[in-house]
Length: 137
Image 1: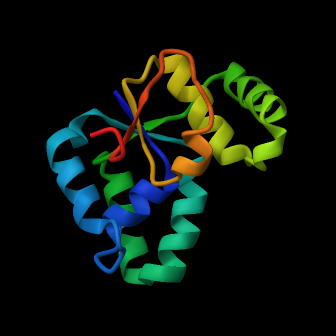
Image 2 (image 1 turned 45 degrees about the horizontal axis):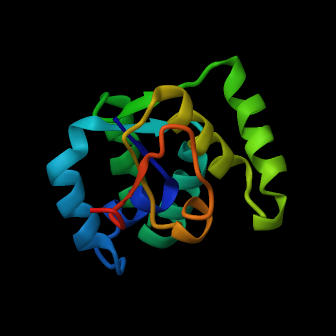
Image 3 (image 1 turned 30 degrees about the horizontal axis):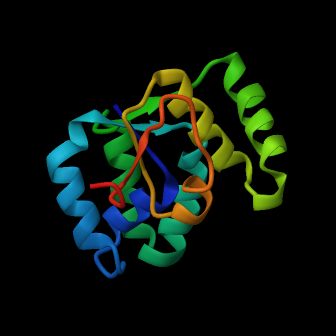
């Protein structure tokens, strides 16, 4: 299982994104194993509307509604675990979305996290040591 972060989804959806080709190649190989944490959905919606436009946002929403993406809606412990991660790494300035992505990756035993945010995700050792894709190939 690969837990997706906001930046990975944005790059996948935005043909003008610097990392679009790399994310498309990664998704073509591994997309059936991707899980989208609930916490990234509002952030993806906002950013894809702002940068890709309403038409791209509508396509993403249509795909979500049709079940094209696996969404992990979480459990009661995810926000508690995210808060713990944020507190332990307060110096990094992480936010709720990153914390939830990390907490879910740990809880689900993810093999990897699809993220372009290697500055934050690369600075933290998570339980199970998920790889960071595309960085770790």
